[in-house]
Image (cartoon, rainbow, N blue to C red; front, side, top):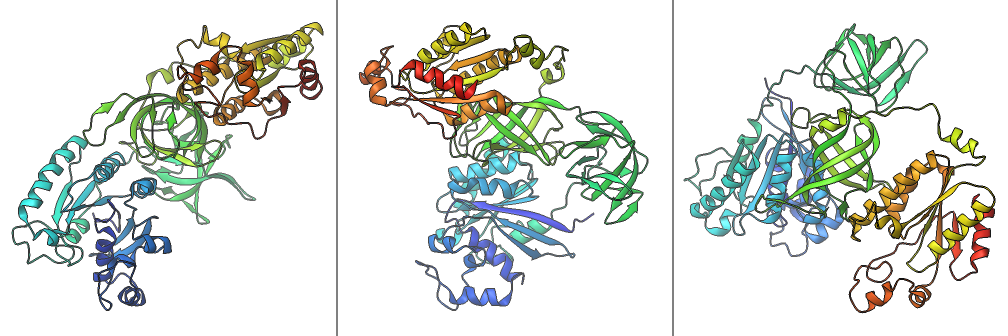
Length: 607
């Protein structure tokens, strides 16, 4: 059975000739407008050696002005190309520069076939290994490695064989089974569309032959899944709208809505205004259930006889795309299809060392690094192993402050402990406990440099609250590091975990109905925002004790600034390590002001 569409991602290091190769594929299969080809004959980028009148194939896909000026591909350029047997090839021309690896990840996530270029003169480079690794992780089933620019090395078979031998070892390590090395010259056209007369020693397929002979493995799809995109309402029905993957739904099927596990039967299947008896893989439909069980965007529908058990702990491979490094214990949004839920990377199991393939123990992942992590979500969600289902086994992580996508993830498996833990609801709740104390629970989170006066103000505030009969408790950063947090240092990841633990303790104390006073440097805005997200809006107040660094240095109650000055304390906040002042604090206190004035300010504005 042939497939009507093949999705191809092209990648390679900068200047390996990728844009020229893709441009030639498009032009020689008559897949681009003639005026575009004419423009490529008469336009020349800076430094080009191609004679005017000849086609500069690289201009066919480098559509952005910035790309033409710099001579590199920045964005992913999508092009459609005609193949044999009425098939179409969708080409995603991904950028080669390491800075734009995130764009390449997006393109590879849906690709069936990958085309990776290697410059014959330069050989396999780090970025080549990165692209091969990502394509392998993303489940690309067929990979063509084009050894390009062989004309520049005299069409040497020895050069080609040396690269192929190295490639074979890499492919074996990455578990890539279906790959083909093709010796080529994109500039001249050798082995791209037509077989080269310059390399009679090569007996394999041309690049075009290898691509168009791909057929998707026919799988027996028996676990249909629909992610609810929206609730469709009309005069005569209410239904769940989404796209079906991995199987077929039939009218009358008993299904389960996840994660609630409510069961119902499919009363109607509606597609483009018409009723259907069944609908299958990749079709967009509306399912009308009977009874009309409660469901919302982000829920999933599966067969009641064979459904994925929702979980909140996962082991996953992660390609880190963020400009700031990943640290465990920091909260992100996990988005999988229409599902969005807060999640924390609880552990970085290891980083994959791209060149050697070794697993390296690390505390953080930097941009473009690949690692295996453990993730905990705030509530159970439906995710499957990526190798079983590409659609329901992938996700992205989004920064909760900037809303930038910072990682692409592929689930390896559900962690067993996620199935052994469930929340127990008690009848006495936070409101009842606070009412008993005749107060409202509150978190007052002091942040500021060491020596700014946080602990001193916290102490006076608690004395004031105690005097008027209110129930409170102070969580002091130093005191917690003597016990619960004594295992933590002062790296970014340890500070993130420190803030997370303090926020969880504060949450428990607020649930007990207390007024919780936190005195913690908490230097990074993202960590404080994650702490804030743990509470209802009206329960959390961030207080910045704003004291000039020179005043804090002069006070130096713990001798920390003296240690920082002699080099024995390199990561003191505000000196050796950055302190990020709050932008939207509920209250800003002058740390040089009289303590009683600051306490009165808090009592008046926050309590």
